[in-house]
Length: 134
Image (tube, rainbow, N blue to C red; front, top):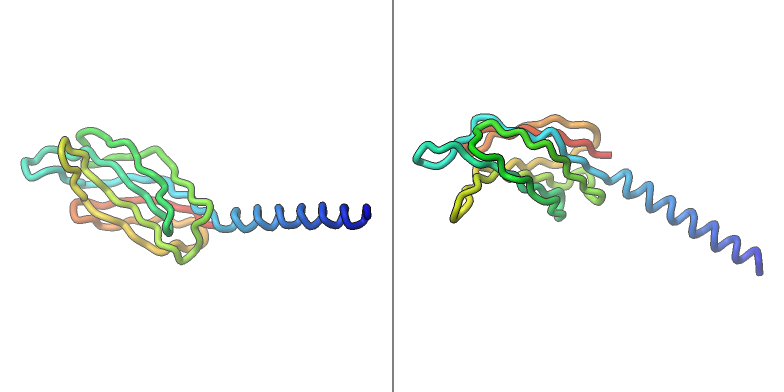
């Protein structure tokens, strides 16, 4: 009877380790987010930009907006424990307004394993970001 109990404990331990390895190998961390040359409204006001970030079907959240800047730097990280290589990483750039926020553009790329530094041209400026995928 004790042999079966020990065998169940070992099996449980192995399953726990495998699940940890699987989630560690699927993790994506997005960081180093900044933009250059963003434009605001038609009246020429500087934008109040913020970001929304997705990896695969997971929404990572959004940043706070940065008031009156065409060249924002967001000192935040987004972590996606279940995102895998070949899933879509999407970063949307928005301009905060009183009534309706303006969509300034979207970066959308397939995740590759490793450490990646990338950028994309938006409708109104350029977005830069980094990510690490294991």
